[in-house]
Image 1 (cartoon, rainbow, N blue to C red):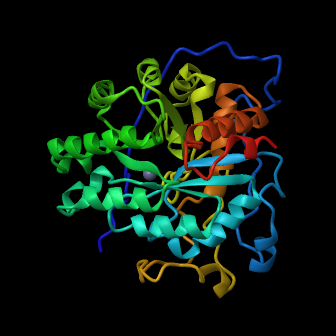
Image 2 (tube, rainbow, N blue to C red; image 1 turned 90 degrees about the horizontal axis):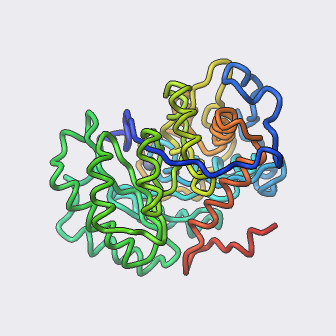
Length: 364
Ligand SMILES: [Zn+2]
Protein backbone atom coordinates (compact mmCIF):
# COMPACT_ATOMS: atom_id res chain seq x y z
CA UNK A 1 0.00 0.00 0.00
CA UNK A 2 1.32 3.41 -0.86
CA UNK A 3 1.95 5.13 2.39
CA UNK A 4 1.49 8.87 2.22
CA UNK A 5 3.06 10.54 5.19
CA UNK A 6 0.06 11.18 7.35
CA UNK A 7 0.87 14.82 7.85
CA UNK A 8 3.36 15.79 5.20
CA UNK A 9 4.41 19.38 5.03
CA UNK A 10 2.18 20.89 7.59
CA UNK A 11 1.96 24.42 8.42
CA UNK A 12 -0.56 24.16 11.24
CA UNK A 13 -1.14 26.77 13.93
CA UNK A 14 -2.42 29.53 16.38
CA UNK A 15 -2.21 31.60 19.85
CA UNK A 16 -3.44 33.62 23.08
CA UNK A 17 -3.01 36.12 25.86
CA UNK A 18 -0.39 34.91 28.28
CA UNK A 19 -1.28 34.72 31.93
CA UNK A 20 1.33 36.11 34.27
CA UNK A 21 4.22 33.73 34.54
CA UNK A 22 6.12 33.23 37.72
CA UNK A 23 9.71 33.99 36.90
CA UNK A 24 10.79 33.88 40.49
CA UNK A 25 9.91 30.23 40.85
CA UNK A 26 12.14 28.97 38.07
CA UNK A 27 14.48 31.45 36.48
CA UNK A 28 15.72 30.58 33.01
CA UNK A 29 18.68 28.29 32.98
CA UNK A 30 21.95 29.75 31.84
CA UNK A 31 22.32 29.26 28.14
CA UNK A 32 18.67 28.50 27.58
CA UNK A 33 17.89 31.76 25.85
CA UNK A 34 19.04 31.13 22.32
CA UNK A 35 18.86 28.37 19.85
CA UNK A 36 22.53 28.58 18.93
CA UNK A 37 23.42 27.71 22.48
CA UNK A 38 21.69 24.37 22.26
CA UNK A 39 24.67 22.14 21.84
CA UNK A 40 24.61 19.17 24.12
CA UNK A 41 22.70 16.14 23.05
CA UNK A 42 20.07 15.05 25.53
CA UNK A 43 19.91 11.62 24.02
CA UNK A 44 21.81 8.45 24.36
CA UNK A 45 19.62 6.13 22.37
CA UNK A 46 21.58 5.73 19.18
CA UNK A 47 21.41 2.08 19.82
CA UNK A 48 19.14 0.27 22.12
CA UNK A 49 21.31 -1.71 24.44
CA UNK A 50 20.43 -5.24 25.21
CA UNK A 51 16.69 -5.74 25.34
CA UNK A 52 17.08 -7.33 28.73
CA UNK A 53 18.53 -4.17 30.24
CA UNK A 54 16.12 -1.90 28.46
CA UNK A 55 13.19 -3.94 29.69
CA UNK A 56 14.34 -3.34 33.26
CA UNK A 57 14.70 0.38 32.85
CA UNK A 58 12.24 2.24 35.07
CA UNK A 59 10.40 5.11 33.47
CA UNK A 60 12.50 7.83 35.11
CA UNK A 61 15.79 6.02 35.51
CA UNK A 62 17.94 8.12 33.21
CA UNK A 63 16.24 11.46 33.49
CA UNK A 64 15.15 13.93 36.08
CA UNK A 65 12.26 15.02 33.89
CA UNK A 66 8.91 13.38 33.32
CA UNK A 67 7.29 13.83 29.94
CA UNK A 68 4.09 12.92 28.12
CA UNK A 69 4.30 12.50 24.33
CA UNK A 70 0.85 13.94 23.68
CA UNK A 71 0.64 12.88 20.02
CA UNK A 72 2.52 10.20 18.08
CA UNK A 73 1.97 7.27 15.71
CA UNK A 74 3.94 4.27 16.88
CA UNK A 75 1.59 2.06 14.87
CA UNK A 76 2.87 3.66 11.67
CA UNK A 77 4.26 1.04 9.25
CA UNK A 78 7.62 2.80 9.26
CA UNK A 79 8.21 2.11 12.95
CA UNK A 80 5.69 -0.43 14.20
CA UNK A 81 8.27 -3.21 14.02
CA UNK A 82 10.50 -1.41 16.53
CA UNK A 83 7.77 0.21 18.62
CA UNK A 84 8.54 -1.81 21.79
CA UNK A 85 12.19 -0.70 21.61
CA UNK A 86 11.19 2.90 20.98
CA UNK A 87 8.87 2.87 23.97
CA UNK A 88 11.58 1.44 26.22
CA UNK A 89 14.20 3.90 25.01
CA UNK A 90 11.86 6.83 25.52
CA UNK A 91 10.84 5.58 28.96
CA UNK A 92 14.50 5.48 29.95
CA UNK A 93 14.69 9.16 28.91
CA UNK A 94 11.73 10.12 31.09
CA UNK A 95 8.80 9.73 28.70
CA UNK A 96 6.16 8.17 30.90
CA UNK A 97 3.16 8.25 28.53
CA UNK A 98 2.46 8.12 24.81
CA UNK A 99 -0.81 9.13 23.15
CA UNK A 100 -0.77 6.91 20.05
CA UNK A 101 -3.12 8.16 17.35
CA UNK A 102 -4.77 5.97 14.76
CA UNK A 103 -5.40 7.51 11.37
CA UNK A 104 -7.73 5.18 9.46
CA UNK A 105 -9.78 2.02 9.67
CA UNK A 106 -6.63 0.14 8.65
CA UNK A 107 -4.63 0.97 11.76
CA UNK A 108 -7.14 1.26 14.61
CA UNK A 109 -6.65 -2.41 15.54
CA UNK A 110 -2.88 -1.85 15.75
CA UNK A 111 -3.36 1.06 18.14
CA UNK A 112 -5.77 -0.99 20.24
CA UNK A 113 -3.31 -3.87 20.49
CA UNK A 114 -0.38 -1.58 21.29
CA UNK A 115 -2.34 -0.05 24.15
CA UNK A 116 -3.15 -3.51 25.46
CA UNK A 117 0.51 -4.51 25.33
CA UNK A 118 1.94 -1.30 26.79
CA UNK A 119 0.43 0.32 29.90
CA UNK A 120 2.09 3.63 28.98
CA UNK A 121 0.24 3.86 25.67
CA UNK A 122 -3.00 5.87 25.60
CA UNK A 123 -4.96 4.78 22.51
CA UNK A 124 -6.68 7.29 20.25
CA UNK A 125 -8.93 6.42 17.31
CA UNK A 126 -9.85 8.71 14.47
CA UNK A 127 -10.06 9.13 10.71
CA UNK A 128 -7.36 11.51 9.48
CA UNK A 129 -8.37 13.86 6.63
CA UNK A 130 -5.85 12.29 4.26
CA UNK A 131 -7.69 8.98 4.54
CA UNK A 132 -11.18 10.35 4.04
CA UNK A 133 -11.43 9.15 0.41
CA UNK A 134 -10.66 5.57 1.46
CA UNK A 135 -13.23 5.32 4.21
CA UNK A 136 -15.68 2.43 4.03
CA UNK A 137 -19.44 3.02 4.03
CA UNK A 138 -19.66 1.88 7.67
CA UNK A 139 -16.54 3.64 8.95
CA UNK A 140 -18.46 5.46 11.66
CA UNK A 141 -20.00 2.26 13.00
CA UNK A 142 -16.57 0.69 13.06
CA UNK A 143 -15.14 3.69 14.90
CA UNK A 144 -17.90 3.54 17.46
CA UNK A 145 -17.19 -0.16 18.01
CA UNK A 146 -13.57 0.61 18.83
CA UNK A 147 -14.67 3.07 21.50
CA UNK A 148 -17.09 0.54 22.98
CA UNK A 149 -14.36 -2.11 23.07
CA UNK A 150 -11.68 0.33 24.28
CA UNK A 151 -13.24 2.60 26.89
CA UNK A 152 -9.86 4.10 27.75
CA UNK A 153 -9.48 5.59 24.25
CA UNK A 154 -9.51 9.25 23.24
CA UNK A 155 -10.43 10.60 19.79
CA UNK A 156 -7.81 11.35 17.12
CA UNK A 157 -6.31 12.02 14.75
CA UNK A 158 -9.00 13.96 12.93
CA UNK A 159 -8.88 17.30 11.16
CA UNK A 160 -8.90 19.57 8.15
CA UNK A 161 -6.19 19.96 5.53
CA UNK A 162 -5.84 22.47 2.69
CA UNK A 163 -2.11 21.82 2.23
CA UNK A 164 -0.53 20.49 -0.94
CA UNK A 165 -1.86 16.98 -0.36
CA UNK A 166 -4.97 17.94 1.55
CA UNK A 167 -6.24 20.17 -1.22
CA UNK A 168 -6.52 17.12 -3.47
CA UNK A 169 -9.17 15.76 -1.09
CA UNK A 170 -12.70 17.12 -1.35
CA UNK A 171 -12.98 19.68 1.43
CA UNK A 172 -16.71 19.16 1.83
CA UNK A 173 -16.04 15.50 2.57
CA UNK A 174 -13.29 16.45 5.01
CA UNK A 175 -15.65 18.78 6.86
CA UNK A 176 -18.41 16.19 7.06
CA UNK A 177 -16.06 13.51 8.44
CA UNK A 178 -14.46 16.00 10.84
CA UNK A 179 -17.80 17.27 12.17
CA UNK A 180 -19.10 13.77 12.81
CA UNK A 181 -16.00 12.86 14.79
CA UNK A 182 -16.05 16.11 16.77
CA UNK A 183 -19.63 15.38 17.74
CA UNK A 184 -18.62 11.85 18.72
CA UNK A 185 -15.88 13.25 20.96
CA UNK A 186 -18.44 15.51 22.63
CA UNK A 187 -20.91 12.66 23.00
CA UNK A 188 -18.24 10.41 24.54
CA UNK A 189 -16.83 13.28 26.61
CA UNK A 190 -13.29 12.50 25.45
CA UNK A 191 -10.46 14.75 24.37
CA UNK A 192 -9.82 14.93 20.64
CA UNK A 193 -6.53 15.36 18.78
CA UNK A 194 -6.90 17.70 15.79
CA UNK A 195 -4.77 18.19 12.69
CA UNK A 196 -5.11 21.50 10.84
CA UNK A 197 -3.20 22.66 7.78
CA UNK A 198 -4.05 26.02 6.21
CA UNK A 199 -7.64 25.77 7.41
CA UNK A 200 -7.62 27.58 10.73
CA UNK A 201 -10.50 29.86 9.83
CA UNK A 202 -12.65 26.84 8.96
CA UNK A 203 -11.47 25.05 12.07
CA UNK A 204 -12.36 27.91 14.41
CA UNK A 205 -15.80 28.26 12.83
CA UNK A 206 -16.58 24.55 13.16
CA UNK A 207 -15.27 24.35 16.71
CA UNK A 208 -17.49 27.31 17.63
CA UNK A 209 -20.51 25.63 16.04
CA UNK A 210 -20.00 22.28 17.78
CA UNK A 211 -18.16 23.34 20.93
CA UNK A 212 -17.32 24.16 23.58
CA UNK A 213 -15.31 21.06 24.41
CA UNK A 214 -15.07 20.57 28.16
CA UNK A 215 -13.06 17.37 27.64
CA UNK A 216 -10.50 19.35 25.66
CA UNK A 217 -9.17 19.66 22.13
CA UNK A 218 -5.50 19.02 21.39
CA UNK A 219 -4.32 21.15 18.46
CA UNK A 220 -1.43 18.99 17.40
CA UNK A 221 1.87 20.31 16.01
CA UNK A 222 0.52 23.81 16.47
CA UNK A 223 2.25 26.34 14.22
CA UNK A 224 -0.53 28.89 13.94
CA UNK A 225 -0.38 32.55 14.72
CA UNK A 226 -0.23 34.12 18.16
CA UNK A 227 -3.37 36.04 17.32
CA UNK A 228 -5.49 32.90 16.94
CA UNK A 229 -4.55 31.35 20.26
CA UNK A 230 -7.14 33.04 22.45
CA UNK A 231 -10.07 32.10 20.23
CA UNK A 232 -9.09 28.44 20.32
CA UNK A 233 -8.21 28.45 24.01
CA UNK A 234 -11.62 29.84 24.88
CA UNK A 235 -13.18 26.76 23.26
CA UNK A 236 -11.10 24.35 25.36
CA UNK A 237 -8.08 23.91 23.10
CA UNK A 238 -4.59 22.85 24.14
CA UNK A 239 -1.57 23.69 22.03
CA UNK A 240 0.74 20.77 21.38
CA UNK A 241 4.25 21.57 20.16
CA UNK A 242 6.40 19.29 18.04
CA UNK A 243 9.67 19.27 16.12
CA UNK A 244 7.97 21.17 13.30
CA UNK A 245 8.38 24.25 15.48
CA UNK A 246 12.09 24.20 14.69
CA UNK A 247 11.19 25.01 11.08
CA UNK A 248 9.41 28.22 12.03
CA UNK A 249 11.24 31.54 12.27
CA UNK A 250 12.37 31.66 15.88
CA UNK A 251 11.05 35.18 16.57
CA UNK A 252 7.61 34.18 15.31
CA UNK A 253 7.72 30.93 17.26
CA UNK A 254 8.66 32.80 20.42
CA UNK A 255 5.78 35.25 20.06
CA UNK A 256 3.34 32.41 19.46
CA UNK A 257 4.61 30.37 22.38
CA UNK A 258 4.39 33.30 24.77
CA UNK A 259 0.76 33.82 23.80
CA UNK A 260 -0.26 30.33 24.93
CA UNK A 261 -1.61 30.05 28.49
CA UNK A 262 0.83 27.97 30.51
CA UNK A 263 -1.90 25.54 31.47
CA UNK A 264 -2.57 24.75 27.80
CA UNK A 265 0.94 23.85 26.62
CA UNK A 266 1.67 20.26 25.60
CA UNK A 267 4.70 18.60 24.01
CA UNK A 268 4.62 15.87 21.37
CA UNK A 269 6.82 14.20 18.77
CA UNK A 270 4.28 13.22 16.08
CA UNK A 271 6.75 10.36 15.54
CA UNK A 272 7.69 9.05 13.05
CA UNK A 273 7.18 12.51 11.49
CA UNK A 274 8.27 15.96 12.69
CA UNK A 275 11.93 15.22 13.27
CA UNK A 276 13.33 18.27 15.13
CA UNK A 277 16.04 20.13 13.24
CA UNK A 278 18.31 22.38 15.28
CA UNK A 279 21.72 23.72 14.43
CA UNK A 280 24.51 21.94 16.27
CA UNK A 281 22.01 19.59 17.78
CA UNK A 282 22.14 16.08 16.37
CA UNK A 283 19.10 13.89 16.75
CA UNK A 284 19.42 10.22 17.34
CA UNK A 285 18.26 7.85 14.62
CA UNK A 286 15.67 5.19 15.18
CA UNK A 287 17.19 2.58 17.49
CA UNK A 288 17.99 -0.67 15.79
CA UNK A 289 16.66 -3.73 17.59
CA UNK A 290 19.41 -5.96 18.85
CA UNK A 291 17.39 -9.13 19.01
CA UNK A 292 14.06 -10.61 18.10
CA UNK A 293 12.82 -9.56 21.51
CA UNK A 294 12.34 -6.06 20.20
CA UNK A 295 9.99 -7.16 17.51
CA UNK A 296 8.26 -10.09 19.10
CA UNK A 297 5.15 -8.09 19.87
CA UNK A 298 4.76 -6.65 16.44
CA UNK A 299 1.45 -7.17 14.84
CA UNK A 300 0.88 -10.03 12.49
CA UNK A 301 -1.17 -7.56 10.52
CA UNK A 302 1.48 -4.90 10.26
CA UNK A 303 3.03 -4.04 6.95
CA UNK A 304 5.44 -6.85 6.10
CA UNK A 305 7.48 -4.28 4.22
CA UNK A 306 8.01 -2.24 7.36
CA UNK A 307 11.74 -1.75 7.73
CA UNK A 308 13.27 -2.56 11.09
CA UNK A 309 16.44 -0.68 10.33
CA UNK A 310 17.69 2.78 11.09
CA UNK A 311 16.43 5.69 9.08
CA UNK A 312 17.70 9.12 9.94
CA UNK A 313 14.60 10.92 8.71
CA UNK A 314 12.24 9.16 11.09
CA UNK A 315 11.40 10.62 14.43
CA UNK A 316 10.85 8.73 17.67
CA UNK A 317 9.50 9.66 21.12
CA UNK A 318 12.82 10.07 22.93
CA UNK A 319 13.39 13.10 20.69
CA UNK A 320 10.71 14.91 22.71
CA UNK A 321 13.66 16.02 24.85
CA UNK A 322 14.81 18.17 21.94
CA UNK A 323 11.36 19.73 21.62
CA UNK A 324 11.45 20.38 25.37
CA UNK A 325 14.83 22.04 25.15
CA UNK A 326 13.86 24.27 22.23
CA UNK A 327 10.47 25.33 23.56
CA UNK A 328 11.94 26.02 27.02
CA UNK A 329 14.64 28.19 25.46
CA UNK A 330 12.10 30.29 23.54
CA UNK A 331 9.86 30.62 26.59
CA UNK A 332 12.87 31.44 28.74
CA UNK A 333 11.78 28.81 31.21
CA UNK A 334 13.81 26.04 32.74
CA UNK A 335 13.45 22.69 31.03
CA UNK A 336 12.44 21.15 34.34
CA UNK A 337 9.59 23.61 34.80
CA UNK A 338 8.32 23.20 31.25
CA UNK A 339 8.55 19.42 31.49
CA UNK A 340 6.51 19.34 34.68
CA UNK A 341 4.00 21.94 33.46
CA UNK A 342 3.38 20.19 30.15
CA UNK A 343 3.22 16.82 31.88
CA UNK A 344 0.57 18.03 34.31
CA UNK A 345 -1.38 19.59 31.45
CA UNK A 346 -1.34 16.30 29.57
CA UNK A 347 -2.45 14.43 32.67
CA UNK A 348 -5.34 16.86 33.06
CA UNK A 349 -6.35 16.42 29.43
CA UNK A 350 -6.06 12.63 29.35
CA UNK A 351 -7.61 11.81 32.74
CA UNK A 352 -11.19 11.49 31.50
CA UNK A 353 -13.51 8.80 32.93
CA UNK A 354 -12.34 5.36 31.78
CA UNK A 355 -8.81 6.53 30.98
CA UNK A 356 -5.66 4.73 32.03
CA UNK A 357 -4.43 8.09 33.30
CA UNK A 358 -5.32 9.07 36.85
CA UNK A 359 -4.13 12.35 38.35
CA UNK A 360 -3.77 10.84 41.82
CA UNK A 361 -1.48 8.10 40.54
CA UNK A 362 0.68 10.68 38.74
CA UNK A 363 1.13 12.92 41.77
CA UNK A 364 4.50 11.40 42.53
ZN1 LIG B 1 -0.15 13.00 13.82
